[in-house]
Image (cartoon, rainbow, N blue to C red; front, top):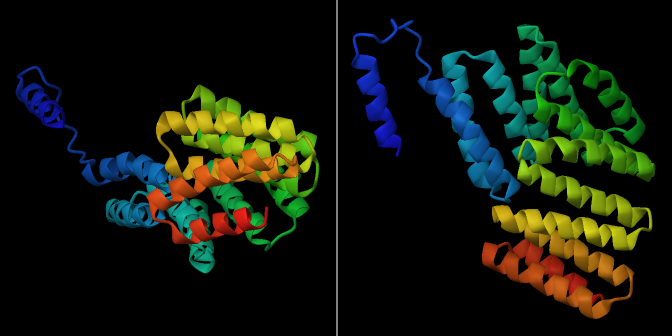
Length: 281
């Protein structure tokens, strides 16, 4: 199909009625733009090393093309993957690089987005208090208006900060705002994460049945998109919730389902963690 499209482009380009070429070349930028979605999808599935390798290549392309906007967006994604790999100093350096680029570019939206990325890192790593992060996100989100995926991300970070502050009703409301965008725009990996986070909020609030319903929603999405990493994480969380309710057979089933997926993924660390949960039932 790709070869056919290239042939058709060449045929139309050779027609006498074709528009005059502008002389612009977009190969490096196009490759990075198209590849970022693949890299982000791989990261969402737990393939962090592959995602990092792809994003490193795409950042090189963005630098070679001297495209500041693309450099910023690749750096943000690359920082996320480094963070997931627990390479925290490198992750924050990547986000700081994006912030500096956005300041030089003079793009208020990308600057605020970059600051929200760093704020989320500060929250999860414990480098900043939840209220400080919430204040940062509320301030910066006023500039995030054009890109819906970034608007959803700002709602996600609000939800995480509110969860840390034990403001569970407000936290779920924030996550539902993110979910509405992700479902409408068919960003299903992100929608699954929204439901997963809603489940954790409900569990902390004591609504264990509501937590299980949210996990079922997340599992349904992950099955649809074949997100093995997400499925394993959901089943592990489901085991934790069932254990809280005293439903030990159901908890054991969920843990074993999670373990079987982690075994298929070859993730020894997560297998050991599941085994520890099973032994401690």
